[in-house]
Image 1 (cartoon, rainbow, N blue to C red):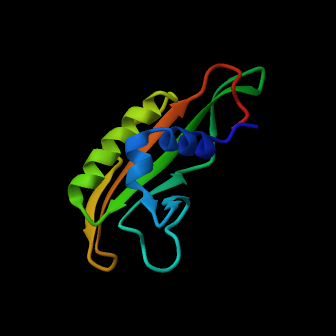
Image 2: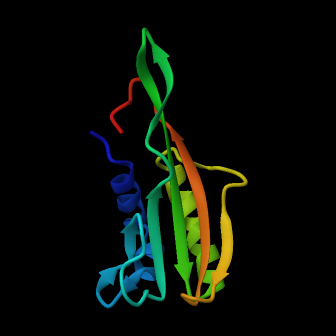
Length: 133
């Protein structure tokens, strides 16, 4: 079984710029699904599935290809940090085969958390017969 979220986490952590940017008190602030409880770190990344993997092609009533869509939220107290990190995320995800979905993003400041948020969605269409996501 392949896990797209773990694959994304690993490629982001391999990027030295991202790894250093999300370092907070000796821990890396890359999370799955939702923000951590309590006070938010200055910079964090959320990896969220947008929907369960969907079959995109089938042969003889059996799926032979899937589509995986994830949302990556970069949050920071600094707006330009969000922009810079999201550009690196896009570059790193391209190495896994993910492409950014146009018109599927968010660029916002949230006064409650005092964080800028740059959220984008990415799609991976798997290779033929790669259906174990």
